[in-house]
Image (cartoon, helix red, strand yellow):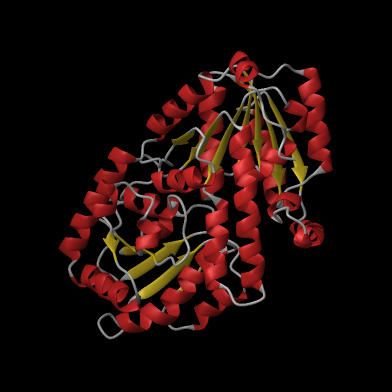
Length: 409
């Protein structure tokens, strides 16, 4: 098949959740089909190195630049409309024109939309079957943001949740099949669009890349770690909460414990955490594995979370015991969640963490169990095989008989 793949952020390098998922999808699809990728880059470094790497996978790679500051300004006039602000943020007339040209020049058998914001580019492809990977249900994420934020941002987030929910409904109507990461996301989506054909495709983890270090982190200074993109508000909120609310409760039992925050783009609030004794903020690192190797425990103290947290899967695959809030673990399978120390509230999180710090044998057992569970339940091969079956079950003839609803644009 000839597939038009639309993605909201260039999926290279695959160094954060949404990019990892898209990168693995492209690799799997391109082994069996011709893929033309049309995507956006809001990071200059990604724009420089991504296209060349992806041209080794895809037949064609087209990337349009997005300036985040200008994109936010472009979204502001839509505040008093029914359009989610997410849509103009990822809008590009350059990309729209290139997609229109490609549809005229090539006869595509399928359009794959990665992230709801890219459905705005479907107008030229009307009549071609559409499969959409929403990844997460963004309207639910914005509703969670609204619950945490203060006015006026709480009102902006509530508006985004409301308008995005309606937009997601229209995207579902336009798609022959919709894919999400977890059963919880699927249930949320069925409430939004009861008639939608929804399939769950979990994220995976590369267990050969993320594997335990022989001998573990040793018996030196105990390190409690967190890995994530620090430009992402839920990550900022999680590490700030842990540093200010949980770590002081751990100190009496483990005064020498360090909190290691690994991830690019730390803003002032996160960088300021390094001023607290025992907290280290790395910023960007080319490879997280040496930092994972230092960790006795990985924490995921999220108040806001959706889908599957790749950081949890990677820590588990590395044989590191994980302490996570119920919200952070909600996307895991029952068996995988059983290997995680689930705790809610500062005192319970601190208690679970101290238990693992004090009992190294118990911590090693939890690490080994985590590795076994994630290897069994989160195979990229299994997830991507299911995705290929979905794509290959679609056809232009099916779209013609079913009828394609009008564009959501």
